[in-house]
Image 1: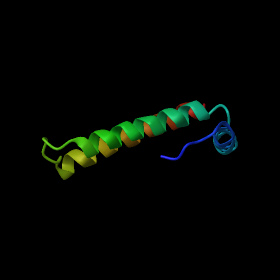
Image 2: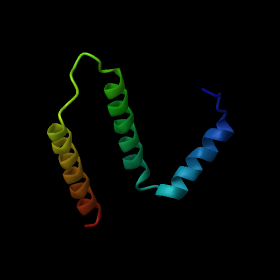
Image 3: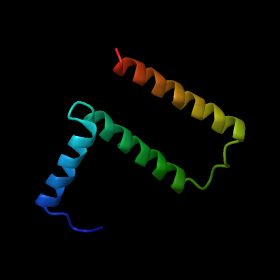
Amino acid sequence: MADLGWAEILIIALVFMFLFGAKRLPDTARAVGRSLRIFKAETTRTDEPAPSLEEQARRLEEQAARLRAGAQQDGR
């Protein structure tokens, strides 16, 4: 990974604040962290069989329901 100085980190932080806003930035960071954890867990898992299509569909439906509930809470 490239070395990032304080100036580069500041620029990146400002861009994120302009894109997402200061209020949504913590939620966005949490979502990115969760996604990276899930990605890492899925790519390192080798001893378990792949879930069935039905199981994958059920998980996606659960995630969509959680996202909808979160969006409704944000819209209050």
